[in-house]
Each structure stands twice: as structure tokens, then as C-alpha cells.
Length: 314
Image 1 (cartoon, helix red, strand yellow):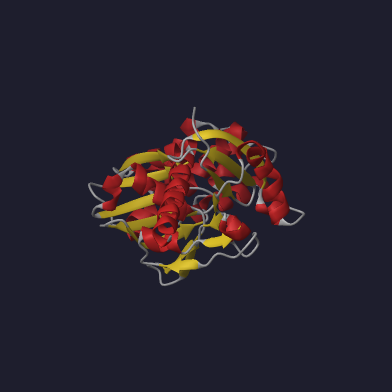
Image 2 (cartoon, one colour; image 1 turned 90 degrees about the vertical axis):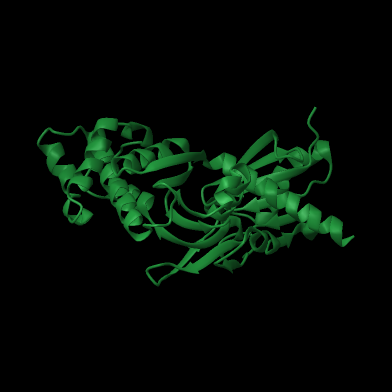
């Protein structure tokens, strides 16, 4: 039977997931809680109440947390580690809480290649995990894509985070879907699975590489009114336009930052699949990695690193 060793936690804006893990990161059980934006009492109280689920049976446990828990709206403000950043620098900058039994992983900051300030919080843990799950990522120049509400395009050089760029692709999609006339209101995410319409949106951008996506967006409505798209298809077409524009722009900006025209895509399987389709249309391969698996591997790596540091200090 697996022996409980630590708790791995991903505490984001909308969700809290705590995983009771053995020393190698194998999940024994899990519990969910409110996201940072939903908490209406002290964060410590919320965390302690959920930890009781584990500690009532296993005793006091160390925990490692990532995500918005370390932001200005979270439990504590963990610093942004400047890039270029090696994994050890990220792990050594964790902020201790609960008498040192809780460690909050810091974010990353950089000046992106457009000369603007940029930040990451949460995705750095997925990168640490990806490096653990696929050691080949630590050799040479690699381009990573972490799609989501705020998609991150990140450059690794011999395992060091060199730089990254954020595209709020998912946020723009949600805003246009829910608060514009481009697609009908009331569609749920699960209603948007229209592969043909999504690919039509992708191809529309690829066919007109010099045309800004702004000049294509109204086609969601006009094609719906003309009977070429269903309501679900209009939303999928919108998604295709935005993802194609995101991918096309990133491939242009990061040309030369990948081996063999391959992008490593880390995130929820359905979303990484959409980005893989967009990359394939531009003759690029995608190596997909489940985002939760990467997060758990990253949290485990941090726990093991800090445990070694503590042991060496004794």
C-alpha cells in the first residue's frame, strides 16, 4: 500500500485541487475546493479545513502549492523569478507558509521578444514537470506552448527558461462567445465540438496569412446568418480563427526556437489537440503532454528538491 508523503496542490483562480501523494508523486486520493476568486474567508482556514481530510488519518504533512495562490490576490505573494531561469532557481525561491510545512512556488517574469514585460504563474510548474517527464526537453532549443485562458509560448534552452510570450486567446474567445453578436448566446463549452467548423476557421486564417484576424471575425455571424454555420459551428469557427492566429503569430516570432519544426504542447488534452491540429496545418508537429500530469510531476519535483535541501542542511 502506498505511503502518504506530501500534498501537491494546484490552487488557481477558479479551482483548488489537492492531491495526497506518495514520495514518487503517485496520487493516493484527492480533494477539491474553491478557487482563489471564490474564497470568502481567510485562505489559511480554507486550506486547513481541506488538509484535515488527509491529516486526520496520516498526521502532519508537507504541501507544495502552485498557481494563483502565490499571486497578489492569493494567500501570499510569491515573487516572480526573472528569466533566464534554471529549474533550481525557481524551486529555491519557494515561499514558506504554515511554519515551513507549505511551500508556494514562485512565478516567472521576463521582457518578451516584443520588448514588453510578461509574467507566468502556474505554468512554470508544468514546465518543471515536463522536464522531469521528458528529459530530452533539457537539451538544446525547444519551443513550448501551454494553451489556455492565457496561452504561453515559452523557449527552453538546455533546460533553462529563456523567455516567454502570453497570448490571451482563451479569454478573448470567451468574451466574444459570451458578450458579442458573433455567435449565439448560451452555448456551453461542450456544445462547441464541431471539428469541421473549427478546421474551417483554421484554414481561413492559413489561406489569408496577411489578413489580420480582426478582418475575419465577422464571418462567424455572416456565415451563421447565411446558413453556412450552425450556432455551435459559429463558435467553433471563432475558436479556429483565434487559435490559427495565435499559432501563426507565434511560429513567426519564434522561428528557429524549435527542433525539427516540433512544438511541445502542454495542457488539457482537448485543448492541446486543437493546437496540434492548427500546427499540423502549418506543417509543424506537436508533441502533446497532459497538463495535470505535468503539474503533478512539477509539484513532486519541487517537493523532492526541497526535501534534499532540508536534509543536507541538517
